[in-house]
Length: 288
Image (cartoon, rainbow, N blue to C red):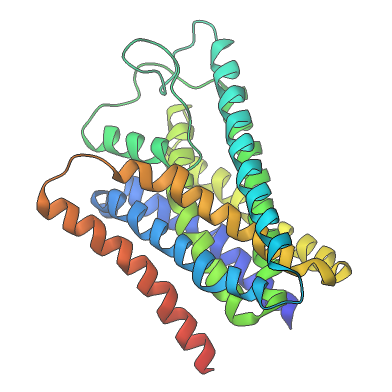
């Protein structure tokens, strides 16, 4: 039964996030892109600090060891982010004369954020008519993006599996948090693939296939965590470090811009809504 819930949770998070991203990127919901960032940040922080970490610290593992694991996890995701930045910069450098839709005004390649800055910037650019006629992303670049997306989704699936093995309610909450933070991630991918001469349907299909890898990661996680049951608290801490890093390093910095009082209030409201949504889902799952 646990494997069934893992599959449902990973498919909902992996593919469901792609379809929501498509609505935000191409559909009538594009105006809510910035709100989605606030919602995702709130959901990730609430999941990490109110659910995953408390569950891990209820185990017999010492708090000292778990805090070390949390620190190592945060540093690991920082280094992973740096490696991804270097990879994309190196890739764009060798693109030659092919124009890059990520390029800034100076012509220097800007970072392709998996789901954060790129997702918002591209969506905003398309909404204001700043089209992608400046050039096309190389086909090899498209597949590199999809490959990186697939690896990321595989990792998300393993984290969701860890949560479900600990507790079904925790798995539902983790799936919700992954879905929330994958939406802006996939928005960036969809816009980049559109710039690579793919139509909307083709771009949606490609990113959906990458999102489906989340389920494969869930199955692998189910097998791995079952074999390493004693290390489950460390898997939960790893999931927490991932969520905290994404929220604090990628999402919240984008919200730290000069806004009107009304826009700031809306930003805070959506952040609190993300926390409230996780709390509500937790209460409903616990009631069952």
